[in-house]
Structures are given as C-alpha cells and as structure tokens.
Length: 326
Ligand code: HPA
Ligand code: ZN
Image 1 (tube, rainbow, N blue to C red):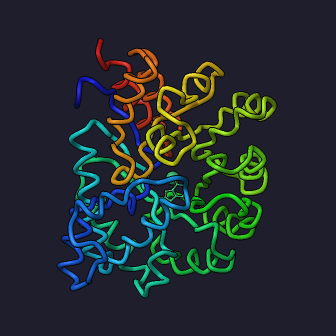
Image 2: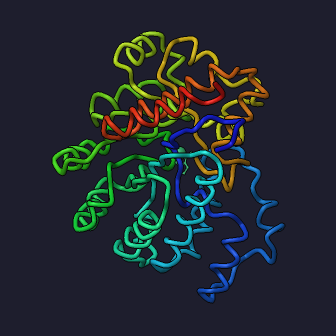
C-alpha cells in the first residue's frame, strides 16, 4: 500500500477507459488491425479534449482493437494489476457492452474475458454493465437481455456516454427490469447535464449512487436531499478538468462538496485518457486543492461506505482506512 494515498475503493472507472495507447497498438498487432495513427506518440497527441463528446469520439474509435475474450481479460488484468500496486482494495468496474455488440463481439467474450481477469486478481472487484444513453432504449434492453446468462459476474447497471439531450427517464423501463433481476443501479448525471437529470436518476431510475453529480451544486434543494439521503457522488477530478468542467484543478468544487457534508468519493473515470489512476487523483487533490490527511481519509472511507459490499467486508476495509498513517 502506498503511504501517500489511503487504501480506497474505485467506484467510477470505465474498463475501456483504461486502454493505454501501448495496449491499443499491442492488441491491434495481435488482431491484425490497421490503426489510423502510426505511433503511440501520435495517438497520445490526439488526447486533447474540449468536452465529453470530443473524448468519446477517440474512446469509441480505440475500441476496434478489443475483439476476443482474451483482449478483455488482458485489459481488465492490466487495470487490476495497477490497482494492486496503488492501494486500490476494491473496484466496481464499468463496461459498455453495446459498444462491442455493435462491432460483432459477443456478450460472452466481453463478460467472460473481464470475469476471467477478476477471478485471477487479488483485488476484490465486480462489474457494472453500462447502457449507452445516446443509443435507443431498445438497444439497452437488448444488451441486458443478452447479459442475463452471465449476471453472476455483474453487480449492477449504469448509464453513460453523451449526457445532454438524453435524460435518465429515457431508460426507465430497462432500469425497472434490472431491479427485477436483483441488480444494483447507478447513473452518470450532472457531469455536463443539468441538476434535474440527477433528480430523475434518483426518482425514475432508482439509482443508489450518482456518477459525477458535480452540477448538483447549482441546486441547493438537491444538495440538501443528497445530504439527507446519503447519496454517494463518484467524483472524478482529473476527468472534470480534461473535459472542461473546470479550467484547472484548483477551481474544482470538491472542497465545496465536502463542506456540504455530501458522501463524496474520488475516482479516475478513464485513467488512460485523463492523466492518472485513482492514486494520481488523490495526489492531485492533495496538491492542488490543499486537502489534508483527514480529508483524504474521509474520501477513502466514503468509497467503502458507498461500495456494493457486504457489511463484514465493508467493516474490514473501513478499519484499514482508519489505521492509515496512524
Ligand atoms: N462520461 C460519460 N460517459 C463516459 C465517460 C464519462 O466520463 N467515460 C466513458 N464513458
Ligand atoms: Zn464515467
């Protein structure tokens, strides 16, 4: 465990967002796929994003190299190896099956490959199946139907991709079905979209956590509700800066969210694209926002409070956080 960052749970990471440029090239070679860029440096030079959509364009394009169960296993194994090195004790990992089904990759290869990496890892981990909100609701329902034989690997469903113009209510039916199947539910809301999307995700989709949620601060009544109901927010500081929500990290509202006594956590989102893994996000908020040891401890404790863990395991992890740097 790194001394600089507390033991933590990562609750907001897209496994496709852990695809490092080096692995893009290695998998392209293995699968005989021609890439538009001729080098890792050329690809990385295109990682300058104005907003969510300009990031998503590169994120989806790079996925062409992910074809087989082995590819998905190697991707998740590399992420989990990093977790083990960097003090992440538990991870709830998003994946975007529709982005693979649409390219002819079967659900079994996606969940089977990711699941094999989870089985082999010393880090506790589970999967969250995300629906693409800029695709039709019927496509989400089809993805969930195809995943049904493999749900022993999956702890919950989520909602991601381009937010504005795609309110949570569009997915009421498929989230109802997910609840029937005994799955947990989370949703990206209030990243670029308005505070009303956060409210809809809670009221219409019945989610137990909000991913991002930073725009909730524009609505004091919503802030009061998030505090009262102890709704976790999975905040991703480096992502928010790279996608233009804040001009620089020093302007991030994480300290305000903490001061409002909200159940805030720190996460990496898409670490291969946004300049750092979860420990880098902790280091950055310590450095640029002046957060002290006790605030970092609170963030890490929140990550285990917000995780989909059974109570004995949650208590064990919380004891580790409490003992950190004592
Ligand atoms: N927001 C929405 N969708 C995403 C993101 C994100 O930050 N990363 C991958 N898919
Ligand atoms: Zn995200």
